[in-house]
Image (cartoon, rainbow, N blue to C red):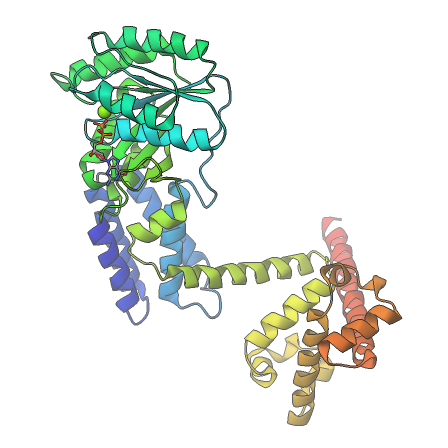
Length: 439
Ligand code: GDP
Ligand code: MG
């Protein structure tokens, strides 16, 4: 998946622009890549369709090329599938909170049990570990060593072959120890898959955990999703611990697993040591998945454009203060010289006095805009939000700070008041119009 995805990114980047044909091709490639990773056909279809619709809905924002815009849409979509931009939520909603850890042998379950114990211990919780793996030789020793390193309570029974019994005895012991969180590790292999699933189901039914965490090895690729689905058929997977992200693997299998189980990734393991654990970050994950570290800059640009849109929206809603005024001026100056900007606008959009400005007047307007910006940048946020607080002493301070004169500051305030009145009138006339239409 990851290989074909990064090829896709290269393809988009390499195209001179996105025409109809390239768009179709890119979407088809994206579909193919996702299908190859065993992502559900229906989901693949929905995903590419929504990206296409989104792409066609609007022109790319000014300053963003069509290919960057398409990349951004793909990127954003994948992030939202992986859980969005906010950090994974890890809450212990009751005491003690019981986590059942499942996954195939070698995926990193026992190591991850230790990592979670470490992570929650550092947050100040008391954690207890239970090992129910009776199949793998030395599993109990592995867990004992981890628990001793962390200096936390644990329960193992090298003499028992009854995983359910070990789990229940362990629970009892941990309740006495008054721990906040109990992590139950399980076997990842049995005589066959059926035996394994049967045992895990029995443990699940006996302990009724608050959360089932599936451990997925990021290097497993395509098989990961099938395994995730197999576990999910037997016990409801609530979240995922993704291991070995310190490898060169990009975690394509994890995407398909998330989609198949509907569970979100919470933790990421990035090494063999207990400390090598972090909360999952969808942004980082998708960047790595698509093999584009330099997308950050594009995302920043899109964000600032979205912020400007926000200002414009507030403006259209009649919310107008000096901060909106400043943002507006800032985005205008970003678009280049005023003369060029005016040429791009249809005459009817311009207020009458601006239609007949000569070069000198334009130059003058430009200088004034820059001066106003300097003045506003010397104001505090409070002053920008409510310029009525500006008294003589504040005006003097601002003039000093911006290398202008109090007269300049006053001129800006006057101009601002004028704009504010215009915006207010616009809003009132819109409302009148609205009433008129409703009648
Ligand atoms: P289990 O069979 O699922 O319990 O897996 P183990 O916890 O015994 O881990 C299997 C192997 O994977 C061990 O050698 C671990 O050190 C290694 N391992 C687990 N997590 C990570 C990780 O995040 N990064 C790396 N590099 N190795 C890991
Ligand atoms: Mg183990």
